[in-house]
Amino acid sequence: MREKLFTPFFTTKAEGMGLGLSLCRTVIEQHGGALTFEPAQPRGTVFRFTLPGV
Image 1 (tube, one colour):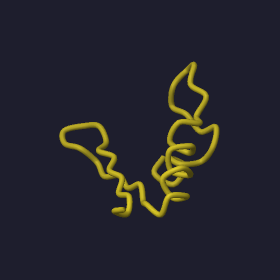
Image 2 (cartoon, helix red, strand yellow):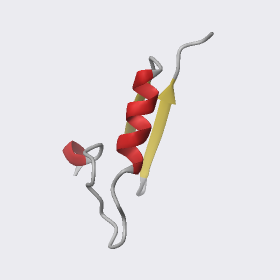
Image 3 (cartoon, one colour):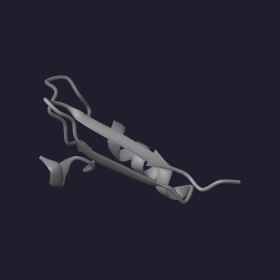
C-alpha cells in the first residue's frame, strides 16, 4: 500500500475517490515543499509537510 499511497485514484475507502493525497503532494511540491509519511503506533499514519520560508 505504501507504494500506491500518492497514486491518483488509489483509495482504501469504499466510497473514496483517491485524489486527496495526490493533489496535496502536487500542490506542496509545486511550492517547493515536500510531503512525507510514517507509520503511527499502534496504528494509523502521520503525514508531515514542509514549505520553504519566505
